[in-house]
Amino acid sequence: MKWSLWAKTNMNWTRKDLLGLEYLNREEIEMILDTADSFKEVSTREIKKVPALRGKTAVNLFYEPSTRTRVSFEVAAKRLSADVINIAVENSSVRKGETLIDTGKNIQALKADIVVIRHNCSGAADMLARALDISVVNAGDGWHEHPTQALLDIFTLREKMGKISGLNMAIVGDIAHSRVARSNIWGLTKLGAKVTVCAPQILFPPGIEKMGVKVSSDIDEVLKHADAVNVLRMQFERDTNTAFPEQLEYFKNFGITQERLAKAKKNIVVMHPGPINRGIEMSSEVADGANSVILEQVTNGIAIRMAVLFLVATAREV
Amino acid sequence: MKIKAKIMDKEAVARAIVRIAHEIIEKNKGTEGLCLVGIRNRGVYIALRLAESIKKIEGTVIAAGALDITFYRDDLALASGRPVVRKTEIDFDINKKNLILVDDVLYTGRTIRAALDALIDFGRPRSIQLAVLIDRGHRELPIRADFVGKNIPTSCEETVEVRLEETDAADEVVIVGKD
Image (cartoon, rainbow over all chains, first blue to last red; front, side, top):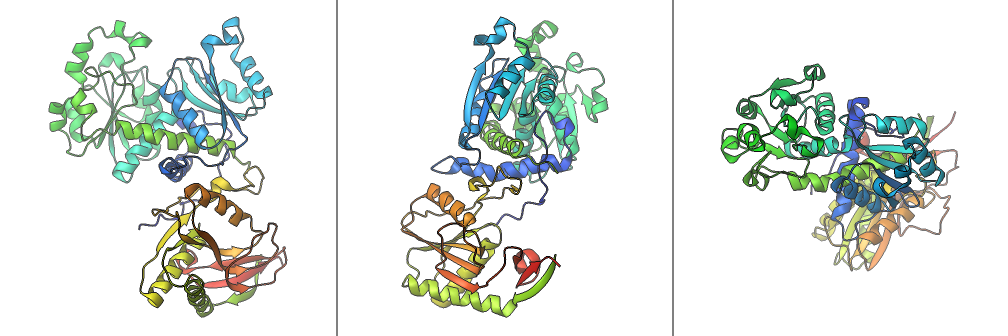
């Protein structure tokens, strides 16, 4: 049997919120990953539950439709024995004109301990965190950040490759509208990976190089050097299909196919945050193939969200 | 904080572990159905040494695992709770086993209470027995050890530190206190 080493650090988590990876330092990111590593074991037990957050209440406040992220947070909170309340905004008083901060203060008045928020406006989570004393976890805000998605991507990559530092990571797809890309870039560069973003020119946000990444529109060249590729979802619901009318043309020029992978490194890790548009971002063969870790990402998402909920709920002032 | 007294040296620690190994075998009439689970962090290394010792005495290898009790602590809400979560690694079935729970120091009993809760989530052992290197008294719960390396009367102002080569580069037990 292999014995895991001591957690590398005895540092304490001091933040009541998780808003984005931009705000965290390398040690904090590694602390979340190490904590998730310990929580992963819980989901393999016959009784998949520990009492760590017994008596705490987590509220999922979702202003955008989301199934996988919401369910993942809900499963994570329940495996920690927290009580979970889901608020889908379509059916709530937000429709009667309540502001975000008023909604947040009402949730705080219910004596909830954690709000997990998904919002279509960038900065919504930050604003809510400033207004509330209870913990706020960002589950995606506009085009800004989606920190738990990036953390589970990085966690999966670290599991596969043993380390992050020095890896060549490619992020392919709609970089301009992607909070997943932004969070991944912050996290990966802080941990010492070399990141290349790859997309048609029209899907790069202005000034992307300033985030410390290489920029390319040559998918075959990018894949040749990559240890791993994170394939983003084309977000047609965000109206990019007007900017990029031909879905088939995208697949032809940027889609990840077996033919393209054949020219890449043999063990290249293929990731996708889901849900997949098969035949647009990647072929079915690739999505279900030997290099794909897409379903492991889903499993790891539980461990990451357990770690995040646990750390923010037990945060300590220094 | 300074060292007030050295209670055990390398040899004393080694002898205590060998004696406890003998007592475990004696009480359980052999090694049939026996397994060891050490509480993170130093309890794990004591459990591994006990397994090694039992192997030398009886020639049988018994399973050893590691248990992290952070999720089960009752002081997570207090300022003193400092959760650094480590891994639980129990890759064998504990059902119907005679399980020896191992820790370095037995003090208030709250760690053991948490460990018992955790173990029950893994299965239903036939029995759970407790082995500790040091029993320093001051129990806050009705818990006692079945196997003790050394009883040390202490004051609550003092701290007992078990140091092991695996984690602290020396085998010794010291009492640490103010002034």
